[in-house]
Image (cartoon, rainbow, N blue to C red; front, side, top):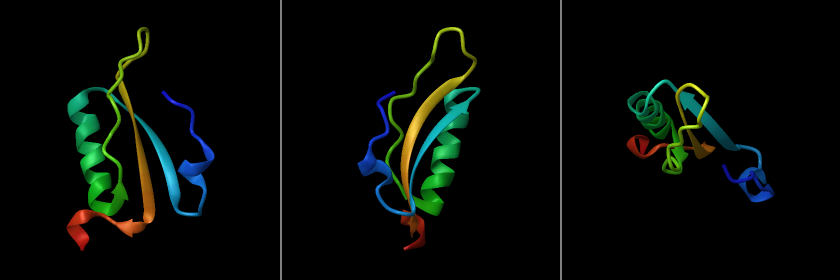
Amino acid sequence: MKEINEQHISEPGLVVLDITAADEETLELVVAQLEERWATSSPALVRRVPGRVGVTSRVYADIRRTGAQDG
């Protein structure tokens, strides 16, 4: 994954979440739940790392703003 740079966390309320789940379906469900709560980016490319269990993706979120369904 790309490095987290200062822009991604330059203010209070900005977060970077690296999510690991057993499968892509679970990962997509978690991201959908986050999108309902906060303003988030779309998940980055889902990655499988050889030798590691599950799939991983990164999401950028602004927890100061609510998700699309709230407003």
